[in-house]
Length: 177
Image (cartoon, one colour):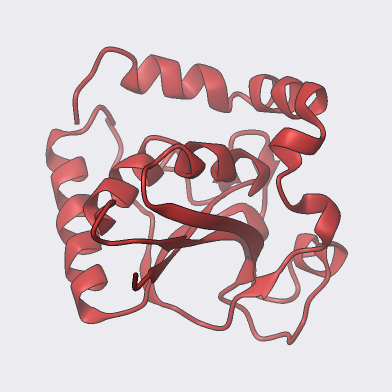
C-alpha cells in the first residue's frame, strides 16, 4: 500500500482530527504547525503569532480508499472559509485557514474545490482560505495529539462553546456538497 499526505489548517487542530479519522483509508491524522519560519516551534510560540505558523493537521491516507477530493470536502465543512482573522472564538494568525498542497494534482483539486464552493456554497462572503505549497510540518506536543479522545468532555465543550458546531450545523446540515 502506498500512502499520500494532505495538510490542512482549520483553526484549532483539536477540532480537525476527528472528522478526517472517520474516512476509510485514513491511516493517521497528526496535529501540528506549518507555514511559518521558526524551526520546531512550541504551542506557546505559535499562539504568540510570531512564528508565521498555523495550527494544522497532516493526514496520511491511502488514495485507493479515500480521494483527495473527499478530504477537501471534509475540510471545507469544518471551517468558516470566509474568515481571515482566525476561526470562531480563536483569533489571530495561528488560527487562520489554509490548504497546503503536496503536488500539482492537489493544488489543482484544491483550487477547483475552492472555486466551486465560492460559486455554489452556502456562504455570502468570498472564500479567503489560501492554497499554498506545503512547508515543513512540525508535530505538536503529545498532549495535543488525539485531544478529542483523551479529553473528550473538555473537547466537546470547547467545540460547542467556540461556535464551530453551530456554524457547521447552520451551513451544512441537510445540504449536499
